[in-house]
Length: 185
Image 1 (cartoon, one colour):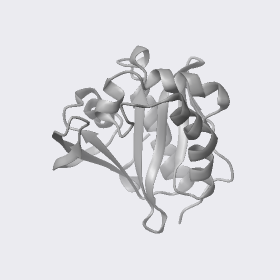
Image 2: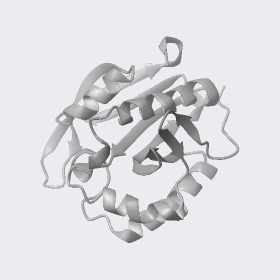
Image 3: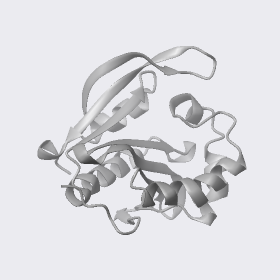
Image 4: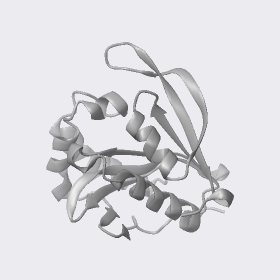
């Protein structure tokens, strides 16, 4: 059974905080996604504008939560903006979710994404009650493949030509999943 929280959670582990997006995050979100790796490996468009960040904070995040379609969180490391992480593509009657994240360039390679993924996954299983949490990663995004493996997700397969890139080419995506009965935080 799924328990949907009454408010967007704030989750903490060591120097990592996951919390709801706020007005103060608009500029860091906009600046963070200007990194060309973000649109290359995520569904965030390459032409992301300040208005997109404003919409994300002011409308998409709160509306998605209210409508029980997604939980969008800001990732902070040692009090500094370090990216975003979410549960989206929810199928609540099947207790399924997809996890996604992006990390700022200066926060990469430090285990921050792995720890944040474990933190949110644990919350998804233990508090919300998901049975299965999936992740889809562009096959050429080797660091993200490593994040999910280190966070306890199992690779289940490769979806050929699943992702359409901005230049019209296609890339394979790797499907990972974690199951509640196998989860060890």
